[in-house]
Length: 576
Image (cartoon, helix red, strand yellow):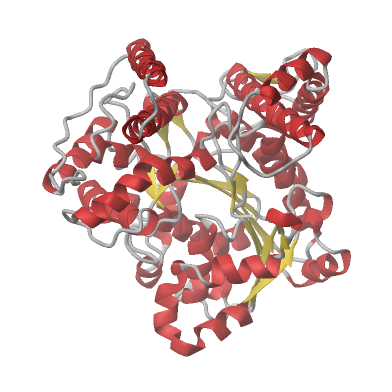
């Protein structure tokens, strides 16, 4: 006779070690574990201390308190526990100060030894998620750290390892992708990594990457580059923090290095058969896990594009911008008129709570069977929605719930056009030329309050247009990539659950209703959790002003954290 709830039993009285707990996937994962298995012994959360302005450091414990304890992901739990919710969180959640990019995960040796004795389950969900992360950052966080976490798991007495990867590790291919480990190919004369995403010696590949990073660092100290940076330093700038000339020059050099490593990472990844640095380094990370796991039962979870939750912890729950959200907002504002995509291509989206549920459901199976098992959490093969259909749903939503301009009038949007990439680039070039011409003309006019206001508007429009163009460029492979991620393992796992388990952990991708999800859940979720607008229908004039400011400035700045431009590169390490 089947047990009533194998997943809950697999978590009760267990000690779990989690990386990426403060990230978009990690937060609802922690919440779900606490809610369905309140008898879990303890959750050790690896959190990196964060440097702050003024030279101070926010400790792991402080980050746990400020970033997780106060997160709205626990609103449902707070309603259940009331005044005792904080005490419950403090009892179950323990911050472990560390850094996945360092040897030994940066954990104190004595504490690490204790963890090796106590931990029953290791879940790695930390990642550098920018598509075009600087190569050194992506190597450290997505590749080397994956091996370190697997090594840690293999040093524990008895543990199950769950590694969160991405479905797109298959490379830039357009075929049906099975739920199997992408095995390396061998041959001393072969290239270390072949086009179309086939591996050879992953260790040698890592060495090549390290050599590139060293070469870029060395090039940054070349006299010619130094002269270019000095010219940049002489340009007039707005007043800011006072720094010595040497400090400013070093800051420019580091920025140059990061820009160059971003370009080199994208070039190298595409040469090797991947769309971008992110998917390429995640593929390498899987190989590092396989090399270091020893005999530890291992699960590789490969979600497609993760978006807001379907129902848990609340419908539309979101923590920051995801892939589609800036484009959705731009459509609603009437700012996005065209996008270089194939309307017939499937965009494989999956709600975050379905990923969390599938991940937790794999644990008892892994304990029973051992070995390595891959699960795709994706919708394209069994419940597809095309880019054209998604656009229609978004367009229809804003037709019924139009945003308002500053005068309080509804913004009447038009359907997007889907030009070829060459046409899209030409349109951007012409628009940029016209805006620059307007800027030059205004400079010749006498300065006044009115001309300064127009200058700001043009500057804002130029920034928004450049960012939307950048999205078109960075998303281009995914807007034209027509592959299918097989989900046989995932569906078999779901169908093996009993009725109680299915109700507790729903990841039935075949039953997802796209109209309901996009129009009633996801877009309202973007409004509430990202734009901080509670209303889901027609907005008031006050709300519109707030939305306007967010769309033009704050929204683009937040987007830049994940998808940096060529002049101000940053990287967002998701949840660690």
